[in-house]
Structures are given as structure tokens and as C-alpha cells.
Length: 226
Image (cartoon, rainbow, N blue to C red; front, side, top):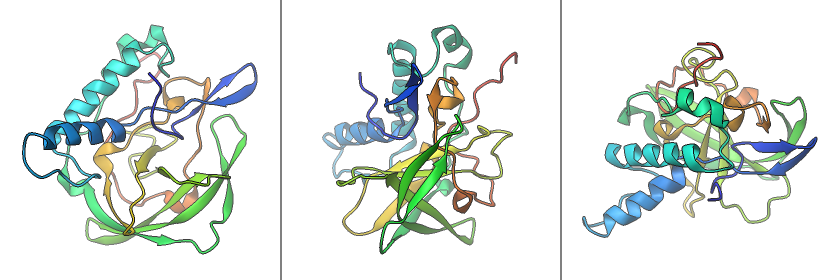
């Protein structure tokens, strides 16, 4: 299979980078929602899913990481890392958001896990309320993107480096025509470099470091020697 989501990481081979997308729950969940909607009445919103659908998507991701020859988890580590660990699904961490578009899509140099910089364009700022406080996250695409098929939202929070991966986590959002979104932190996932240093992953910028504990989505993988 080809991992269907961009930006999760870029595999390094022979000193050069080639794009090899990471697998998030978003496309699996959308497929699950579509299948379910065929038999159970009106379809759910594209950016949301029931707890059952999220659990099914997580199981499918475990299967892909276990069986795919290009899995970001080295074969010798799979028995230790899989199944991936998650916080319990919590609807309170699924919130509506509005995207305030950037006028000129400024380009940023985003640091990566290998010390290089990756040029990204900021599409806009997602504005939302979580735990009673207004918050924002910048949404990006890779520089040079002409047709936007996915918004890349890297973030860190107060669990980063303890319960969750030390370099932050990612969300992927499908663009909407209305500018309104659902940010579901239950779908937050680790970058590929969380499993292997052979993958290069962008770090969340300072603007995307939330001053709240996001106890939803994927947890940190087991530490070496744990």
C-alpha cells in the first residue's frame, strides 16, 4: 500500500530525501464513515467519526504498520511498539474551528528531526475554543503546492515530552469550501521519526505550541530499553 497522508515524515535514503507519506487515521476513518453511511442513514460529517469508527481506523493502521514493507516501524521493533498506544477517545477534544486565510501564504523554514529546514507555506490560522479558552493553530502546506488536498497541522501541548512524543504530533485536515472545520485531537498521530531516525519529520513551530494538555490521540511509543 502507499501511505495516503503527506507530511508524516520523509524517508532518508543514501543521504537524500524522498517523499514517503505517513499513515494517519484520517483517510481510514473517512472510508469507514462512508461504508457505514451506506447502511445507517445520513452520512456523518467528513471530519468526524464515532468512537467505533475511530477504533476501527486505529486497528487498520496497526495492521498496515505491521505488514507493509515500507512501514516506518522497523521489523525488530514492531512487537514492542504495536499496537500503537492512545488516550481514551474523548468527544471534548473534538471542536469546531474556523480557518482565517493568510493573504499571501507566507513561506516558513520549518526545522526537522535531521537538522535540515523544510519550506512550508502557511495557508491560514485555525481559530477554535478548547476547555473554555480561545486558541489557534497555524495550518500549512509544503512550499510550491498548487492544489491543496490536505492541511498539515503540527502541534505540541503540555503532554509533549511526557505522555506524548517529544517532537510533537500531527493533524491532517481536508480542505472545506466553507472555511469551517472540525479539529478532532482524537485523530492526532505521531510523526514517523517517533519510530525510526531514518525518517525526517518537521517540528511544530512556536505558534502551534498549545498551553493545554491534549490528552487525546496517539501516545508516545515505548522508550528505547523500556
